[in-house]
Each structure stands twice: as structure tokens, then as C-alpha cells.
Image (cartoon, rainbow, N blue to C red; front, side, top):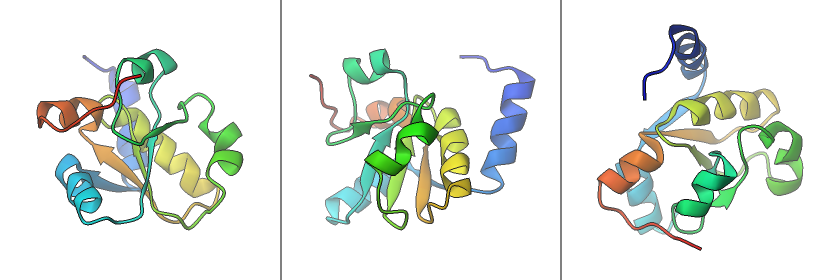
Amino acid sequence: MVHSEKFLAIVDDARARIKECAVDDVRQMRNAGESIMLVDVREESEYARGRLPGAMHLGKGVIERDAEAKLPDPDAAIILYCGGGYRSALAADNLQKMGYTNVISMDGGYRGWTEAGLPIERP
């Protein structure tokens, strides 16, 4: 997918303020049994086609509205992902503005996860 310059500029701006990790970092955290919440910020239709095992859906369009109810612990380790790492970076930036202290955007997103041959979950 080709992204517009203005979209990439706001993503780069958000990335200057957030933490990011690689797909392999998430794989290692899961294998080590670390307590992380995986949050898929893609559209509902994308989530329905496949997701990381155990991920909850909280779309980018509603994450700020629903975060406090779905993510009650602002200090919990939360890994956000989308298709490639752009929308999750924007969502991570907003969650931090809301007081979440341990939010990480997974660079590479769902696409990177599947390209690495890692397991997915389907309904």
C-alpha cells in the first residue's frame, strides 16, 4: 500500500513519542510468558479474517472512546498492532496522551507477523 506524504508525516511525528518493537520481540515476549495485552486496532473486517492469537479488537476509530473500559489498567503492558505499524503508532500516541504508560506499537504489524510464518487465529 502506498501512503500519502501527510499521513506518513503524522505517523513519523507520533513515532517520535512512542515505543515500538519488532514482530520478533512480541514473539519472544509471548514465548517467555510475559504478561502482555495484544490489541488489534485494524478494522473489524480485517480482524475477522485473522488475528494474532489472543488479541482483542479495539479499532483505531474507537480506541480513545473505549480504552478505559477495555483497558482498565493504565500501567499494563499493551502491544498494539495494525496491518503494518502505522495506525498502531497513531493509536499508541493517543493512549499515551490518555495516561497509559506501557504502550508499544508493533512495527510490521499483522503483515509482518504472517510473513514471519507465526500463528494466527481465525473465527
